Amino acid sequence: MNKMQTTEEAAQRREYADALFRKAGIVITEAEREKIESADFGLNRFEETGLGVLVYVNTNRCCAKELAMWPGQTCPEHRHPPFEGTPGKEETFRCRSGLVYLYVDGDPTRDPVCKPPPGRYTVGHEIELRPGMQHTIPPGTLHWFQAGPEGAVVSEFSTASRDELDEFTDANVVRT
Amino acid sequence: MNKMQTTEEAAQRREYADALFRKAGIVITEAEREKIESADFGLNRFEETGLGVLVYVNTNRCCAKELAMWPGQTCPEHRHPPFEGTPGKEETFRCRSGLVYLYVDGDPTRDPVCKPPPGRYTVGHEIELRPGMQHTIPPGTLHWFQAGPEGAVVSEFSTASRDELDEFTDANVVRT
Image 1 (cartoon, rainbow over the protein chains, first blue to last red):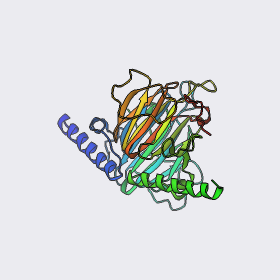
Image 2: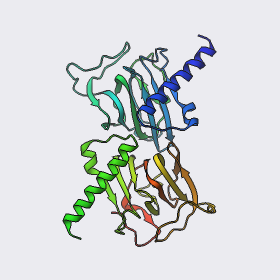
Image 3: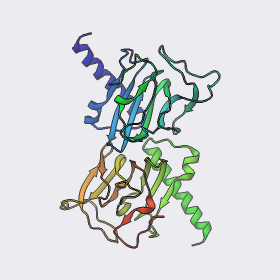
Image 4: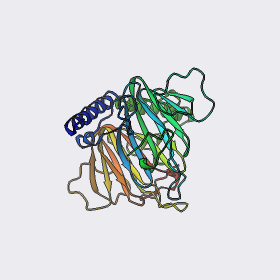
């Protein structure tokens, strides 16, 4: 794949994420639109395993992001380790539109709605988040999540975010 | 004013705040609707000096709130002091709908858009926030804000929030 295609692809993904935000009633600036990141976790299967991310604010004390998820897209299993004397990132996911299924450590749910994509997934306690519903993940907790059939927009409120420290269950996954 | 009226008033304010949220595309649950607080800062002039507040999450590390502001309503001047070994609350205001004018320490703006309501106001550096625009307030910074003529919905992302510690410039203002 040449650089030209990659740039075009990135632009298309930003456009799609922005459309999801707009459908959810979320207004962003022109400058923010250009900053939307499409994270593919080094797997090059973005629509299956990936995430559109707009960071609103990320200081060394707190962070807020808007996540755009393609239909059925998965954010792969990971946890946030302690760093620099802090317990690690604590985060709250709040569903704004669509549906999102969060899987965390705990009793595995029988007949879960989602099937994880290829890769290594070890936790299966399902939490369904419809618009207006939220869940807080303590630091160090393994979790992954998948959007429903119409995609989803999820707000993330957290302590300082250091994505590059995230520990993924699947050794093939990288977050840069 | 008897208790009955007060309860009715609180319900009306919750309804109005919820309508502002809905107009901004923000979905909240039934349980959250009941938790919307109408802060009048002890002045009993709510539509002039007050704030509708829905706390999404407030742990001892981070906090996220949705603020509903009536047309022309003002949140009075205050700052967030250090507490328990932390530098104090750092907060980001992000306008979701309507218009909000934020006034902070710094060169006073000539011909500011807003006039503060009766009370004590000492800072006048104006920052206009239209939908999708945001501003971060460092701990200890004096600030106040007023909604435009159609009211506003403002998301607040911050470190731990301890409203009862807020230091108001006007000694008549209390936050309980």
